[in-house]
Each structure stands twice: as C-alpha cells, then as structure tokens.
Image (cartoon, rainbow, N blue to C red):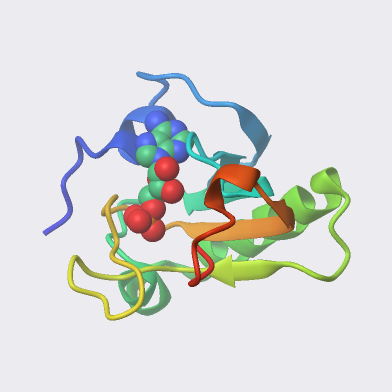
Length: 124
Ligand code: AMP
C-alpha cells in the first residue's frame, strides 16, 4: 500500500527540498542525494504509484505521457543523447538492487562512476 509520507511524496509536495532538474504537471526530476555516477538523476511521477508496475498499470495516459516528457526534457537538460543507464528497482527484496523509496522512480545515470564507488561491481 502506497505510503503518502515517503520522501519523494514530501519532495513533490514541497515539504523537503531537492535539487530539481525539470518539472511538468505530471512528473519531476531531481539529483539523487547519494550520486553514484557523474549524473545521477531520479525521474518521478507526481501521482501516488509505489513502483514501475503500479505506474504502468494504473497511471492515466496523461500521467504516462507527462512522465516520459519529463524523462526526455531531463535527458536533454543534462546533455544526455545516448550512453546512459535507466534502472527502476521494485520491491524490498528485489533480486539485483532493493527498492528503498516506495514511490516509483527511474534512476537515470551517465558519465563516470564516482571514485568512492569504483569497487562496486554491480552498477547502481
Ligand atoms: P531505490 O533504492 O531505487 O529506491 O533508490 C532510492 C534513491 O533515492 C537512492 O539512490 C537514494 O540515494 C535516493 N534518495 C533518498 N532520499 C533522497 C532525497 N531526499 N533526495 C534525493 N534522493 C534521495
């Protein structure tokens, strides 16, 4: 069940600050507080969707279009044309990397991995 007091819901409501990249009616993007790569941005819908499957199943066509428009504008703002990774973690027991904030977000990463993370084998 969606927790409306998760940290991204608070960012969307303006209750806590973020380093915003782009925002439209349906979505926003901001820098991850713990960046692993040179560019590490999170793209989030404004609606209350717990993970990518919830968003894909239940968001309206306008919300979905707004989310992807935000994704494109974010990539453009960062100067990312190709050579990036996108990752959506889903679930506290996801096999690769666990989801820690239960509001759907796409990690958009590009550029060099930060030196303090060079020893990490598995990407994000
Ligand atoms: P995930 O494990 O996929 O749920 O990723 C959650 C991400 O949110 C992590 O990379 C955190 O560093 C990031 N994060 C947590 N709190 C904040 C915040 N207040 N502002 C920006 N990013 C955050």
